[in-house]
Image (cartoon, rainbow, N blue to C red; front, side, top):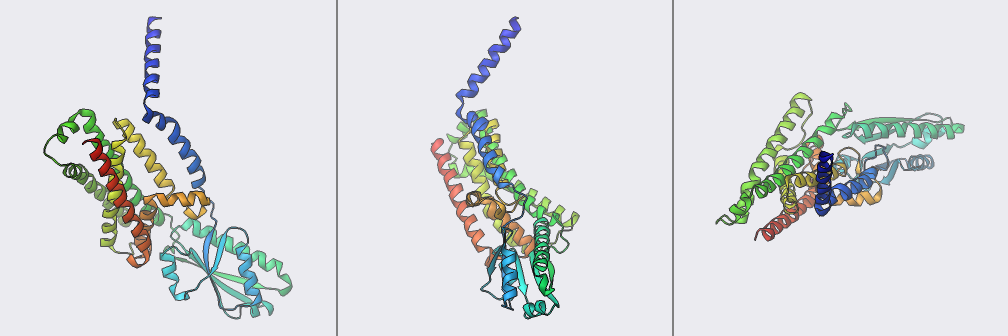
Length: 367
């Protein structure tokens, strides 16, 4: 009986400590609720809102009706491209379009005469799953259009082509994403926990009263994790290319240079987490919640275009969204600065802002 009261007293004590710790309360209640609500909408494996460029060289009544039938529902978002079909590759590299419908001349005349009427659907095959579903949608819509216009005895034939991933291998899409995720996880987790560990051991205060400046201390704590992040990234790239046979279409210096810029974001986030936590356990949880949110809203699993508009706007607050597109663009499409400049600009802005905020908060706390 005495042991039961002892256990009860310890349980009561632990509950009191938990409810007195505001950071722990946020971890227990607020963070899971936010993730459940946001990620419940963000993770959607359906394929919708496929931005499709229309190149209608026929401009007949039947070609316009076929384009309208493709626009029915929310599968394809059809837009008449103001650029040449020769610029299609650049449109895909900038993620302006995910597919292109090319309708040749005499399309309508062939239908009216009961002849074969070919049309081409070119799909960005980076995400093999989404590309396969998109081509399946197009085939069903063409078959339905054929049935509805049976009086013309039409026969629309859609020639389908995958760009950047002609083998339709999903690993080609996932491995570049894993490279971005690994770099994020390693640097955020290790940086936040290393600084908090110094505080728990009491050595952080001892170091801060020495002549070592705050920038020097931050550099000394973060450079090792930046190096480890690059090592992990290089190992992932080596496994992807040598083991899985993933082609690398872009520039190695560009990929590593932009990864270095992105590291200022993740290292800054790790420093920031260390300033709002007191224990390694808290730092681990905060870092983990940030990483889960970043991964799920970056387009790693599900295309951002599939998410509800509100969640799509929220993804702009996620730096990993831009780095994910950069890594996949360089590796799979051979994209350069001329097509990635918007993502690069956003990533540079986030890197400067987050790292500066983390330094200011760290300096203020340990002044």
